[in-house]
Amino acid sequence: MNFTTQQKDFIEKFVTEVINGDAAIFAGAGLSASDGFVNWKELLRDLASEINLDIDKEYDLISVAQYHFNKHKRGKINNKIKNEFSTLSKGSENHKILARIGISTFWTTNYDKLIEKSLEEENKTVELKIKNEDFSSNIKKKDATVYKMHGDKDSPESAVLIKDDYESYNDKREFFSITLRGDLLSKTFLFIGFSFDDPNLDYILGRIKVLLKDNTPVHYCFFKSVNEKDFDKLNITPEQKKEAFLYAKIKQQLKIEDLLRYGINAIMIDDYPDITDILREIENRLKRKNVFISGAANEYAPFTETIAKGLIHDLSYKLAKYAYKIISGFGLGIGSFVIEGALDYKLNSKYRNLDDLLILRPFPQTQSGSKSLKEIWTDYRNDMLSYAGVAIFIFGNKINDEGKLVNSEGMLEEFDICIKQGVIPVPIGSTGWMAKDLWERVNAEMDKYFPSDAKLRESFVGLGKDGLSNDEIVKNVIEFISRLQKL
Image (cartoon, rainbow, N blue to C red; front, side, top):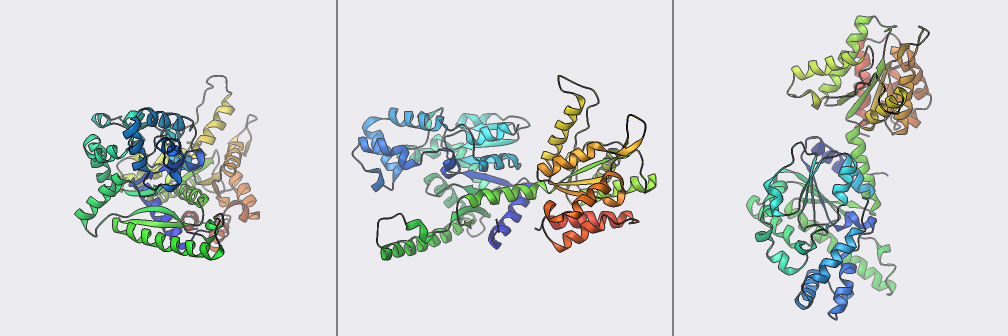
Protein backbone atom coordinates (compact mmCIF):
# COMPACT_ATOMS: atom_id res chain seq x y z
CA MET A 1 0.00 0.00 0.00
CA ASN A 2 1.23 3.50 -0.83
CA PHE A 3 0.61 5.49 2.33
CA THR A 4 -0.48 9.12 2.25
CA THR A 5 1.66 11.79 3.88
CA GLN A 6 -0.84 11.96 6.74
CA GLN A 7 -0.74 8.19 7.24
CA LYS A 8 3.09 8.14 7.18
CA ASP A 9 3.22 10.89 9.77
CA PHE A 10 0.77 9.01 12.00
CA ILE A 11 2.69 5.72 11.65
CA GLU A 12 5.96 7.38 12.64
CA LYS A 13 4.44 9.13 15.67
CA PHE A 14 2.47 6.14 16.90
CA VAL A 15 5.51 3.85 16.64
CA THR A 16 7.33 6.27 18.95
CA GLU A 17 4.43 6.18 21.42
CA VAL A 18 4.43 2.36 21.43
CA ILE A 19 8.19 2.25 22.01
CA ASN A 20 7.85 4.73 24.89
CA GLY A 21 5.02 2.69 26.44
CA ASP A 22 2.53 5.54 26.02
CA ALA A 23 0.21 4.04 23.37
CA ALA A 24 -3.29 2.80 24.09
CA ILE A 25 -6.11 1.33 22.02
CA PHE A 26 -9.81 2.15 22.25
CA ALA A 27 -11.75 -0.52 20.39
CA GLY A 28 -15.33 -0.07 19.26
CA ALA A 29 -17.71 -2.43 17.55
CA GLY A 30 -16.06 -1.93 14.16
CA LEU A 31 -12.91 -3.76 15.28
CA SER A 32 -14.93 -6.98 15.54
CA ALA A 33 -17.03 -6.38 12.43
CA SER A 34 -15.04 -8.70 10.17
CA ASP A 35 -15.31 -11.51 12.75
CA GLY A 36 -19.08 -11.79 12.43
CA PHE A 37 -20.09 -9.14 14.93
CA VAL A 38 -23.76 -8.25 14.58
CA ASN A 39 -24.07 -4.48 14.35
CA TRP A 40 -26.31 -2.74 16.83
CA LYS A 41 -29.21 -2.38 14.44
CA GLU A 42 -29.20 -6.12 13.75
CA LEU A 43 -28.78 -6.92 17.44
CA LEU A 44 -31.89 -4.89 18.28
CA ARG A 45 -33.95 -5.68 15.15
CA ASP A 46 -36.09 -8.42 16.74
CA LEU A 47 -36.46 -6.50 19.98
CA ALA A 48 -37.59 -3.37 18.11
CA SER A 49 -40.14 -5.42 16.20
CA GLU A 50 -41.61 -6.69 19.47
CA ILE A 51 -42.46 -3.11 20.46
CA ASN A 52 -43.73 -2.25 16.96
CA LEU A 53 -40.74 -0.17 15.88
CA ASP A 54 -38.89 -0.36 12.54
CA ILE A 55 -35.19 -0.47 13.40
CA ASP A 56 -34.29 0.93 9.96
CA LYS A 57 -36.11 4.13 10.85
CA GLU A 58 -34.39 4.52 14.22
CA TYR A 59 -31.12 6.30 14.97
CA ASP A 60 -31.24 6.48 18.77
CA LEU A 61 -30.62 2.79 19.41
CA ILE A 62 -30.00 3.30 23.13
CA SER A 63 -33.58 4.57 23.42
CA VAL A 64 -34.89 1.58 21.45
CA ALA A 65 -33.21 -0.76 23.95
CA GLN A 66 -34.69 1.28 26.82
CA TYR A 67 -38.20 1.13 25.32
CA HIS A 68 -37.96 -2.66 25.09
CA PHE A 69 -36.72 -2.86 28.68
CA ASN A 70 -39.64 -0.71 29.83
CA LYS A 71 -42.07 -3.30 28.44
CA HIS A 72 -40.22 -6.60 28.84
CA LYS A 73 -37.49 -5.94 31.42
CA ARG A 74 -33.96 -7.28 30.93
CA GLY A 75 -34.34 -10.97 30.13
CA LYS A 76 -34.50 -10.89 26.34
CA ILE A 77 -31.79 -8.22 26.06
CA ASN A 78 -29.48 -10.33 28.21
CA ASN A 79 -30.10 -13.42 26.08
CA LYS A 80 -29.37 -11.43 22.93
CA ILE A 81 -26.01 -10.27 24.27
CA LYS A 82 -25.01 -13.71 25.53
CA ASN A 83 -25.98 -15.58 22.35
CA GLU A 84 -24.83 -13.13 19.70
CA PHE A 85 -21.39 -12.58 21.20
CA SER A 86 -20.69 -16.21 22.14
CA THR A 87 -20.22 -17.07 18.47
CA LEU A 88 -17.13 -14.84 18.21
CA SER A 89 -14.16 -17.07 19.01
CA LYS A 90 -11.15 -15.83 17.04
CA GLY A 91 -9.85 -12.33 16.45
CA SER A 92 -9.27 -10.66 13.10
CA GLU A 93 -5.85 -9.82 11.67
CA ASN A 94 -6.23 -6.41 13.31
CA HIS A 95 -6.73 -8.06 16.71
CA LYS A 96 -3.66 -10.23 16.15
CA ILE A 97 -1.42 -7.33 15.14
CA LEU A 98 -2.53 -5.21 18.09
CA ALA A 99 -1.86 -8.14 20.41
CA ARG A 100 1.67 -8.56 19.06
CA ILE A 101 3.04 -5.04 18.97
CA GLY A 102 3.50 -4.44 22.69
CA ILE A 103 0.62 -2.14 23.64
CA SER A 104 -0.31 -2.64 27.28
CA THR A 105 -3.55 -0.64 27.61
CA PHE A 106 -6.79 -1.57 25.85
CA TRP A 107 -10.21 0.00 26.34
CA THR A 108 -13.31 -1.34 24.66
CA THR A 109 -17.07 -0.95 24.64
CA ASN A 110 -17.41 -4.42 23.09
CA TYR A 111 -18.86 -7.36 25.00
CA ASP A 112 -16.88 -10.00 23.10
CA LYS A 113 -13.62 -11.57 24.30
CA LEU A 114 -11.59 -11.16 21.12
CA ILE A 115 -9.07 -8.66 22.50
CA GLU A 116 -8.14 -10.72 25.55
CA LYS A 117 -8.14 -13.98 23.55
CA SER A 118 -5.83 -12.49 20.93
CA LEU A 119 -3.44 -11.29 23.63
CA GLU A 120 -3.44 -14.67 25.36
CA GLU A 121 -2.72 -16.42 22.07
CA GLU A 122 0.48 -14.34 21.98
CA ASN A 123 1.33 -15.73 25.43
CA LYS A 124 0.58 -12.41 27.09
CA THR A 125 -0.57 -12.22 30.71
CA VAL A 126 -3.82 -10.23 30.63
CA GLU A 127 -5.65 -8.45 33.43
CA LEU A 128 -9.35 -7.81 32.88
CA LYS A 129 -11.31 -4.95 34.40
CA ILE A 130 -15.01 -5.67 33.91
CA LYS A 131 -16.58 -4.60 37.23
CA ASN A 132 -15.72 -1.95 39.81
CA GLU A 133 -14.54 -4.74 42.11
CA ASP A 134 -11.80 -5.64 39.62
CA PHE A 135 -9.97 -2.41 40.49
CA SER A 136 -9.32 -3.63 44.04
CA SER A 137 -6.59 -6.05 42.95
CA ASN A 138 -3.86 -6.24 40.34
CA ILE A 139 -2.00 -9.01 38.55
CA LYS A 140 1.74 -8.71 38.97
CA LYS A 141 3.96 -8.76 35.87
CA LYS A 142 1.01 -8.46 33.49
CA ASP A 143 1.60 -7.65 29.84
CA ALA A 144 -1.70 -5.88 29.17
CA THR A 145 -4.81 -4.57 30.88
CA VAL A 146 -8.16 -4.73 29.08
CA TYR A 147 -10.83 -2.37 30.39
CA LYS A 148 -14.29 -3.53 29.30
CA MET A 149 -16.14 -0.35 30.17
CA HIS A 150 -19.55 -1.62 29.00
CA GLY A 151 -19.26 -5.07 30.50
CA ASP A 152 -18.86 -8.57 29.13
CA LYS A 153 -21.06 -11.13 27.39
CA ASP A 154 -20.73 -13.49 30.35
CA SER A 155 -22.39 -10.95 32.65
CA PRO A 156 -25.10 -9.51 30.37
CA GLU A 157 -27.23 -8.40 33.31
CA SER A 158 -24.66 -5.71 34.12
CA ALA A 159 -23.77 -4.77 30.52
CA VAL A 160 -24.26 -1.14 29.54
CA LEU A 161 -26.91 -0.90 26.81
CA ILE A 162 -30.08 0.95 27.83
CA LYS A 163 -30.53 4.61 28.80
CA ASP A 164 -30.75 3.70 32.49
CA ASP A 165 -27.25 2.19 32.25
CA TYR A 166 -25.77 5.31 30.69
CA GLU A 167 -27.49 7.67 33.09
CA SER A 168 -26.22 5.78 36.16
CA TYR A 169 -22.79 4.99 34.67
CA ASN A 170 -20.71 7.37 36.77
CA ASP A 171 -22.25 5.97 39.95
CA LYS A 172 -22.19 2.26 39.10
CA ARG A 173 -18.90 2.27 37.13
CA GLU A 174 -17.13 5.22 38.68
CA PHE A 175 -13.66 3.62 38.58
CA PHE A 176 -13.88 3.18 34.81
CA SER A 177 -14.64 6.88 34.34
CA ILE A 178 -11.79 7.93 36.63
CA THR A 179 -9.25 5.55 35.09
CA LEU A 180 -10.20 6.36 31.50
CA ARG A 181 -9.92 10.06 32.24
CA GLY A 182 -6.41 9.48 33.55
CA ASP A 183 -5.38 7.36 30.56
CA LEU A 184 -6.75 9.90 28.09
CA LEU A 185 -4.55 12.50 29.78
CA SER A 186 -1.37 10.43 29.98
CA LYS A 187 -1.46 8.18 26.90
CA THR A 188 -1.88 8.51 23.15
CA PHE A 189 -5.03 6.66 22.10
CA LEU A 190 -5.83 5.11 18.76
CA PHE A 191 -9.59 4.71 18.36
CA ILE A 192 -10.49 1.80 16.06
CA GLY A 193 -14.00 0.85 14.95
CA PHE A 194 -15.50 3.59 17.08
CA SER A 195 -18.33 5.91 16.04
CA PHE A 196 -17.93 8.50 18.84
CA ASP A 197 -21.62 8.29 19.66
CA ASP A 198 -21.07 6.90 23.16
CA PRO A 199 -22.48 9.23 25.86
CA ASN A 200 -19.92 8.05 28.45
CA LEU A 201 -16.96 8.94 26.27
CA ASP A 202 -18.56 12.23 25.25
CA TYR A 203 -18.90 13.17 28.91
CA ILE A 204 -15.30 12.25 29.79
CA LEU A 205 -13.85 14.01 26.74
CA GLY A 206 -15.97 17.03 27.56
CA ARG A 207 -14.65 17.19 31.13
CA ILE A 208 -11.06 16.97 29.88
CA LYS A 209 -11.80 19.72 27.38
CA VAL A 210 -13.14 21.97 30.15
CA LEU A 211 -10.18 21.29 32.43
CA LEU A 212 -7.41 21.60 29.87
CA LYS A 213 -9.06 24.03 27.45
CA ASP A 214 -6.91 23.93 24.28
CA ASN A 215 -4.12 21.85 25.85
CA THR A 216 -5.74 18.47 25.23
CA PRO A 217 -3.41 15.52 24.47
CA VAL A 218 -3.11 14.17 20.93
CA HIS A 219 -5.16 11.08 20.01
CA TYR A 220 -6.00 9.42 16.69
CA CYS A 221 -8.88 7.65 14.99
CA PHE A 222 -9.54 6.16 11.56
CA PHE A 223 -12.16 7.69 9.25
CA LYS A 224 -13.17 6.12 5.95
CA SER A 225 -13.45 8.90 3.38
CA VAL A 226 -16.93 9.37 1.99
CA ASN A 227 -16.94 8.01 -1.56
CA GLU A 228 -19.51 8.63 -4.29
CA LYS A 229 -19.58 4.88 -4.96
CA ASP A 230 -20.93 4.35 -1.43
CA PHE A 231 -24.28 5.62 -2.70
CA ASP A 232 -24.56 3.40 -5.79
CA LYS A 233 -26.70 0.84 -3.95
CA LEU A 234 -29.37 3.39 -3.11
CA ASN A 235 -32.47 3.26 -5.27
CA ILE A 236 -32.45 6.96 -6.14
CA THR A 237 -31.71 9.13 -9.16
CA PRO A 238 -28.13 10.14 -10.12
CA GLU A 239 -28.89 13.70 -9.01
CA GLN A 240 -30.11 12.48 -5.64
CA LYS A 241 -26.99 10.32 -5.25
CA LYS A 242 -24.80 13.31 -5.97
CA GLU A 243 -26.70 15.39 -3.45
CA ALA A 244 -26.50 12.64 -0.80
CA PHE A 245 -22.76 12.24 -1.40
CA LEU A 246 -22.04 15.96 -1.05
CA TYR A 247 -24.17 16.16 2.10
CA ALA A 248 -22.38 13.18 3.67
CA LYS A 249 -19.01 14.66 2.78
CA ILE A 250 -19.86 17.98 4.44
CA LYS A 251 -21.16 16.21 7.54
CA GLN A 252 -18.03 14.04 7.79
CA GLN A 253 -15.76 17.08 7.58
CA LEU A 254 -17.75 18.80 10.33
CA LYS A 255 -17.41 15.67 12.49
CA ILE A 256 -13.63 15.57 11.88
CA GLU A 257 -13.29 19.23 12.85
CA ASP A 258 -15.41 18.68 15.95
CA LEU A 259 -13.20 15.80 17.16
CA LEU A 260 -10.21 18.13 17.05
CA ARG A 261 -11.75 19.95 20.01
CA TYR A 262 -10.84 16.87 22.04
CA GLY A 263 -7.42 16.41 20.45
CA ILE A 264 -8.61 13.49 18.30
CA ASN A 265 -7.04 13.58 14.84
CA ALA A 266 -8.81 11.68 12.06
CA ILE A 267 -6.54 9.52 9.87
CA MET A 268 -8.29 9.21 6.53
CA ILE A 269 -8.49 5.85 4.74
CA ASP A 270 -10.06 4.86 1.43
CA ASP A 271 -11.41 1.54 2.69
CA TYR A 272 -11.40 -0.49 5.90
CA PRO A 273 -8.68 -2.96 4.80
CA ASP A 274 -6.34 0.06 4.78
CA ILE A 275 -6.45 -0.08 8.59
CA THR A 276 -4.84 -3.53 8.50
CA ASP A 277 -2.13 -2.25 6.16
CA ILE A 278 -1.39 0.67 8.47
CA LEU A 279 -1.28 -1.54 11.56
CA ARG A 280 0.97 -4.01 9.75
CA GLU A 281 3.34 -1.19 8.83
CA ILE A 282 3.42 -0.07 12.47
CA GLU A 283 4.32 -3.63 13.45
CA ASN A 284 7.04 -3.79 10.80
CA ARG A 285 8.52 -0.47 11.98
CA LEU A 286 8.51 -1.68 15.58
CA LYS A 287 10.13 -4.97 14.66
CA ARG A 288 12.82 -3.12 12.73
CA LYS A 289 13.87 -1.62 16.05
CA ASN A 290 14.74 -5.19 17.11
CA VAL A 291 17.98 -6.44 15.52
CA PHE A 292 18.98 -10.10 15.57
CA ILE A 293 22.72 -10.78 15.44
CA SER A 294 23.52 -14.13 13.85
CA GLY A 295 27.09 -15.29 14.12
CA ALA A 296 29.51 -18.02 15.11
CA ALA A 297 33.29 -17.98 14.92
CA ASN A 298 35.97 -20.50 15.68
CA GLU A 299 38.20 -18.46 13.38
CA TYR A 300 38.08 -14.67 12.87
CA ALA A 301 40.10 -14.42 9.64
CA PRO A 302 40.34 -12.16 7.64
CA PHE A 303 40.45 -10.19 10.94
CA THR A 304 42.76 -10.66 13.87
CA GLU A 305 41.00 -11.95 16.97
CA THR A 306 41.43 -8.62 18.75
CA ILE A 307 40.01 -6.57 15.86
CA ALA A 308 37.13 -9.02 15.34
CA LYS A 309 36.11 -8.90 18.99
CA GLY A 310 36.36 -5.12 18.87
CA LEU A 311 34.07 -5.08 15.81
CA ILE A 312 31.40 -7.17 17.54
CA HIS A 313 31.61 -5.04 20.68
CA ASP A 314 31.46 -1.75 18.75
CA LEU A 315 28.55 -2.93 16.60
CA SER A 316 26.55 -3.98 19.66
CA TYR A 317 27.41 -0.74 21.47
CA LYS A 318 26.28 1.44 18.54
CA LEU A 319 23.05 -0.52 18.04
CA ALA A 320 22.21 0.03 21.71
CA LYS A 321 23.17 3.69 21.45
CA TYR A 322 20.75 4.22 18.55
CA ALA A 323 17.93 2.60 20.56
CA TYR A 324 17.87 -0.74 18.75
CA LYS A 325 17.12 -3.76 20.87
CA ILE A 326 19.56 -6.59 20.23
CA ILE A 327 18.50 -10.24 19.99
CA SER A 328 21.21 -12.86 20.36
CA GLY A 329 21.42 -16.64 20.52
CA PHE A 330 24.82 -16.35 22.19
CA GLY A 331 26.67 -17.80 19.20
CA LEU A 332 30.14 -19.26 19.76
CA GLY A 333 32.82 -16.58 19.65
CA ILE A 334 30.20 -13.87 19.11
CA GLY A 335 27.59 -13.81 21.88
CA SER A 336 29.76 -12.75 24.81
CA PHE A 337 31.08 -9.72 22.89
CA VAL A 338 27.54 -8.74 21.87
CA ILE A 339 26.61 -8.70 25.55
CA GLU A 340 29.73 -6.75 26.48
CA GLY A 341 28.95 -4.06 23.91
CA ALA A 342 25.36 -3.63 25.11
CA LEU A 343 26.46 -3.72 28.75
CA ASP A 344 29.17 -1.16 28.08
CA TYR A 345 26.57 1.22 26.62
CA LYS A 346 24.19 0.57 29.54
CA LEU A 347 26.87 1.55 32.05
CA ASN A 348 27.44 4.81 30.17
CA SER A 349 23.82 5.77 29.60
CA LYS A 350 20.41 6.29 31.20
CA TYR A 351 19.39 2.64 30.84
CA ARG A 352 18.96 0.94 34.20
CA ASN A 353 18.04 -2.49 32.92
CA LEU A 354 19.97 -4.58 30.42
CA ASP A 355 16.63 -6.11 29.34
CA ASP A 356 15.82 -2.78 27.70
CA LEU A 357 18.73 -3.36 25.32
CA LEU A 358 19.05 -7.10 24.92
CA ILE A 359 16.99 -10.27 24.36
CA LEU A 360 19.10 -13.37 25.01
CA ARG A 361 18.09 -16.84 23.86
CA PRO A 362 21.08 -19.14 24.56
CA PHE A 363 20.79 -22.42 22.68
CA PRO A 364 20.12 -25.47 24.88
CA GLN A 365 22.95 -28.01 24.79
CA THR A 366 21.05 -31.14 25.87
CA GLN A 367 18.05 -32.89 24.36
CA SER A 368 14.74 -32.64 26.21
CA GLY A 369 11.55 -34.52 25.37
CA SER A 370 10.85 -36.25 22.07
CA LYS A 371 12.45 -33.60 19.84
CA SER A 372 16.04 -33.92 18.70
CA LEU A 373 18.53 -31.21 19.63
CA LYS A 374 18.52 -30.03 16.03
CA GLU A 375 14.72 -29.66 16.08
CA ILE A 376 14.91 -27.76 19.36
CA TRP A 377 17.47 -25.40 17.87
CA THR A 378 15.22 -24.80 14.86
CA ASP A 379 12.37 -23.89 17.22
CA TYR A 380 14.70 -21.52 19.07
CA ARG A 381 15.72 -19.85 15.84
CA ASN A 382 12.10 -19.37 14.78
CA ASP A 383 11.28 -17.89 18.17
CA MET A 384 14.20 -15.46 18.18
CA LEU A 385 13.55 -14.22 14.68
CA SER A 386 9.84 -13.74 15.41
CA TYR A 387 10.86 -10.74 17.53
CA ALA A 388 13.17 -9.20 14.92
CA GLY A 389 12.71 -6.96 11.92
CA VAL A 390 16.38 -6.91 10.89
CA ALA A 391 19.03 -9.65 11.08
CA ILE A 392 22.77 -9.02 10.93
CA PHE A 393 24.97 -11.93 9.82
CA ILE A 394 28.62 -11.85 10.86
CA PHE A 395 31.46 -14.35 10.25
CA GLY A 396 29.81 -17.79 10.36
CA ASN A 397 32.16 -20.76 10.69
CA LYS A 398 32.48 -23.82 12.90
CA ILE A 399 34.50 -26.98 13.41
CA ASN A 400 32.60 -29.93 11.93
CA ASP A 401 32.57 -33.53 13.18
CA GLU A 402 35.67 -34.26 11.12
CA GLY A 403 37.58 -31.44 12.76
CA LYS A 404 37.49 -29.20 9.68
CA LEU A 405 36.68 -25.48 9.69
CA VAL A 406 33.56 -24.99 7.55
CA ASN A 407 30.78 -22.48 7.00
CA SER A 408 28.07 -22.46 9.67
CA GLU A 409 24.94 -24.37 8.62
CA GLY A 410 23.09 -22.84 11.56
CA MET A 411 23.62 -19.36 10.15
CA LEU A 412 22.25 -20.51 6.80
CA GLU A 413 19.17 -21.88 8.56
CA GLU A 414 18.73 -18.57 10.38
CA PHE A 415 18.96 -16.74 7.05
CA ASP A 416 16.25 -18.98 5.55
CA ILE A 417 13.98 -18.47 8.57
CA CYS A 418 14.68 -14.77 8.36
CA ILE A 419 13.40 -14.65 4.76
CA LYS A 420 10.30 -16.72 5.58
CA GLN A 421 9.38 -14.38 8.43
CA GLY A 422 9.94 -11.19 6.43
CA VAL A 423 12.99 -10.15 8.43
CA ILE A 424 15.41 -7.98 6.44
CA PRO A 425 18.87 -9.62 6.17
CA VAL A 426 22.08 -7.61 6.55
CA PRO A 427 25.06 -9.93 5.98
CA ILE A 428 28.42 -8.27 6.65
CA GLY A 429 30.26 -9.79 3.72
CA SER A 430 33.62 -8.29 4.66
CA THR A 431 33.79 -10.66 7.66
CA GLY A 432 33.98 -13.64 5.30
CA TRP A 433 32.72 -17.22 5.70
CA MET A 434 28.95 -17.79 5.58
CA ALA A 435 28.35 -14.05 5.97
CA LYS A 436 30.22 -13.50 2.70
CA ASP A 437 28.14 -16.13 0.88
CA LEU A 438 24.92 -14.59 2.17
CA TRP A 439 26.04 -11.07 1.23
CA GLU A 440 26.70 -12.24 -2.34
CA ARG A 441 23.26 -13.86 -2.49
CA VAL A 442 21.48 -10.71 -1.31
CA ASN A 443 23.65 -8.40 -3.41
CA ALA A 444 22.69 -10.31 -6.57
CA GLU A 445 18.95 -9.66 -5.99
CA MET A 446 18.65 -6.70 -3.63
CA ASP A 447 15.06 -5.87 -4.59
CA LYS A 448 14.04 -9.33 -3.41
CA TYR A 449 15.26 -8.71 0.13
CA PHE A 450 14.69 -5.06 0.99
CA PRO A 451 13.07 -1.85 -0.35
CA SER A 452 14.53 -0.29 -3.47
CA ASP A 453 16.43 2.79 -2.32
CA ALA A 454 19.74 4.26 -3.53
CA LYS A 455 21.11 5.06 -0.06
CA LEU A 456 20.12 1.64 1.21
CA ARG A 457 21.93 -0.02 -1.68
CA GLU A 458 25.02 2.10 -1.16
CA SER A 459 25.28 1.13 2.52
CA PHE A 460 24.71 -2.53 1.73
CA VAL A 461 27.31 -2.66 -1.05
CA GLY A 462 29.82 -1.17 1.37
CA LEU A 463 29.37 -4.16 3.68
CA GLY A 464 30.86 -6.47 1.09
CA LYS A 465 34.16 -4.65 0.63
CA ASP A 466 37.39 -6.15 1.94
CA GLY A 467 39.81 -4.26 4.15
CA LEU A 468 37.23 -2.02 5.83
CA SER A 469 37.98 -0.71 9.30
CA ASN A 470 35.65 -1.50 12.19
CA ASP A 471 34.36 2.07 12.15
CA GLU A 472 33.50 1.83 8.44
CA ILE A 473 31.64 -1.46 8.88
CA VAL A 474 29.66 -0.22 11.87
CA LYS A 475 28.87 3.04 10.07
CA ASN A 476 27.46 1.18 7.04
CA VAL A 477 25.34 -1.12 9.23
CA ILE A 478 23.87 1.75 11.26
CA GLU A 479 23.20 3.81 8.11
CA PHE A 480 21.47 0.83 6.47
CA ILE A 481 19.22 0.07 9.45
CA SER A 482 18.47 3.74 10.12
CA ARG A 483 17.51 4.24 6.49
CA LEU A 484 15.10 1.31 6.74
CA GLN A 485 13.16 3.11 9.47
CA LYS A 486 12.35 5.93 7.05
CA LEU A 487 11.13 3.84 4.13
